[in-house]
Length: 88
Image 1 (cartoon, rainbow, N blue to C red):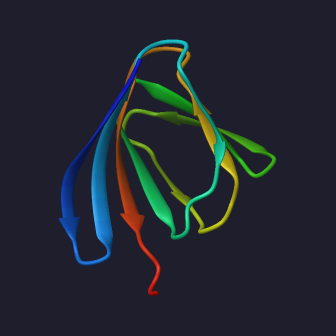
Image 2: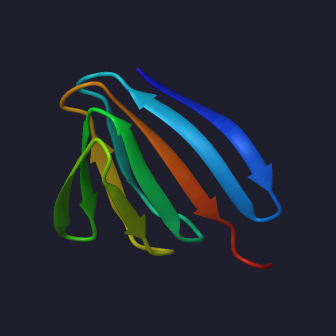
C-alpha cells in the first residue's frame, strides 16, 4: 500500500512523509502549488509532464505547480514531500 502522513503544517507549507510498497502507483495528478520531493530510502520512478525521472535515495525533484505527475514504486521507497500552498 501507500502510507501518507502529515508531519508538519506551518502557514502555507506542508511537510508529508509517504512510504510506497513495491508495485504501488499514484496516478497522474496536479498540485495547486510547487512540491519538493526528497527520497529518503529506496528509488522512486516519477513521470513529470512527459518526462520520466528516476530518483534514488538522497536525490530531490521540484515539481512546479499545475504540472501533471505520477509516481510508481518498483521497489519500496520513502519520501518527504514539501508542498507550498498558493495564496487564496
